[in-house]
Image (cartoon, rainbow over all chains, first blue to last red; front, side, top):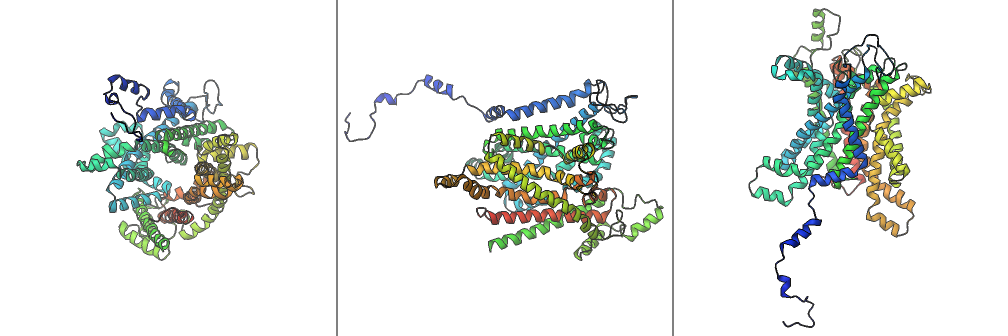
Amino acid sequence: MRVNMLSLQNKVSPEDFAPLGDDCFQEEALDTEEIGYWKASWERLRANRIAMTALVFIVILMFFAFLGPKLSPYTYDQQVRGDEAMWPCFKHPFGTDRLGRDILVRCMIGTRISLIVGMVSAVIVMIVGSIYGAISGLIGGKTDIIMMRVVDIVYSVPEILLIVVIKLIISEPLDALINTVPAFKGLQKVGSGLIAIFIVYGCLYWVGMARIVRGQILQLKNLDFVTAAQALGCSRGRMIREHLLPNCIGQLVATAMLQIPSAIFTEAFLSYLGIGVSAPLASLGSLTSESLNGFSSYPYRLIFPAVLISLIILSFNLFGDGLRDALDPKMKK
Amino acid sequence: MQTIQYIIKRVILALVSLFAIVTMTFFLMNLMPGDPFMSEKASEESRAILIAKYGLDQPVYVQYGRYLKNLAKGDMGTSYVLQKGRDVSQIITESFQTSMKLGIRALILAVIVGIILGCVSGLNKDKLPDSIIRIVTSIGISMPGYVIASILMLVLAVRLGILPVSFNRPGGAVMPIIVLATYPTCYLARLTRASILEVMNQDYLRTERAKGMSELVVVFVHALKNSLIPVITYLGPLTASILTGGFVAESVFNVPGLGRYFVSSISSRDYTMIMGITIFYSALIVFMNLLCDILYKIVDPRIKFD
């Protein structure tokens, strides 16, 4: 082979073009183990000590709320004669209230309600908000403008006011529905108060999620894979389900997670006002407001529910922050 | 020109939103079981007379039309139950003054303390002050208002006796202000911190340092200005929520503000009061957000008008 002395070309030999053996790929594969999105996120989450501590707390709180009442000798509405207004002691670690009800069990039930409210409403918000936001973002144009104005309107509603109004409207028909229709009998245990709260969340709280999802969809919409899917005749519904939402799932989960504390806040606040869960069921909000009568002599009645609810919200806040950073490192601040 | 166009468009949208909220509340309100006079210890007959007197026996859309007509004239009607016979607009103005006095003081406190904490935290990233501030603010945003209120009451008023429980005594406003300011202070601190961390890494600050600017000038003249932009966006919703969200503080500390009518007007079905408060509060929220958006665009020319 003639080689030009001035040429900058590399010297090549025919061996360089020989096919590689199978073993060399294996060698490469060894040090680039494929890490999926979820696994990578989990690794990032696990490295975050604060978030992991919060997760541990959440798990402990769940045991406390769901297993605790089963282990306790008392029930939340049981009035133990002779044990009225006791200070924390061995028999009643959190003390008892004026009617002789064990505050520990009542706190467990309250925690259970807070956790249920938080998680169910996060799911509701995620479903309603993501569907609404995805439709608005994908269709665009006039539909988008109108749908986003609706979001603006719901956003500026004084929410507590509307929550109370809606709750009063739906409570009665809901009660009737639950008590007469056999299919809804199972809901009796949950109580119309709680279901009304869920419905209200479904009506009001999805707007933040809808905005975030719409923003994401608007970004994704212009990417090539969407055009490709469109060219292949993908329908809009399928586009949302199979292409767009899975691509913003990280933000979806993170936003929903951060929704939990605010839902718990609102429920506790409503119960504090006496329009949340109905007595004798206990919520951390109603426990706090009950304790206000004579709390100078029985401060423990205030301290336990107050510390518990703060702990729940703190854990979810910290875990939510960690989850957001882990699921979506770009969003990290 | 573009700015004026944008502002006009936003004002019209705000008015449309307000109208939608008024309409929605009016019809929802009438769906509630019961009526304003259900708790009167009067015979069926006199109740019927009362209902006829206020025109509540007419179809809802007729009532709605009449309400809008009066509203256009600036007449919000008179209260049915809570302060019978008094003008709703008068009640709102009067009691809102108290709420506003508390709210504005809380707002100023929150903005000053929040931004300072955020700056200290952001400029000392991962050092001791940062860790302390982050822990404190995390706890602060996790405590519901009523928990803070009850604990303050227990510790400061009942146990230590430093502050009076009653709002009317001197120093009585301190605890409601703290309750109102805690959440926004902590939130602002976190927001400012995040924003400062983001700005500190930007190229233009490196340029400043390379030019030999002192760290003080870099931070206070150049970094802070840009990192406060996201804080401005939060100020609108914050002002609205402090001014409207005084319910907890007002009910725990017996403050004669607007917040106490919030729920009582609904539970007593005082229709005109419900409407009055809804209109007032939503107008406050809508226009605060509007003001902020406009301010945001003026402060930060990088944001395009759409």
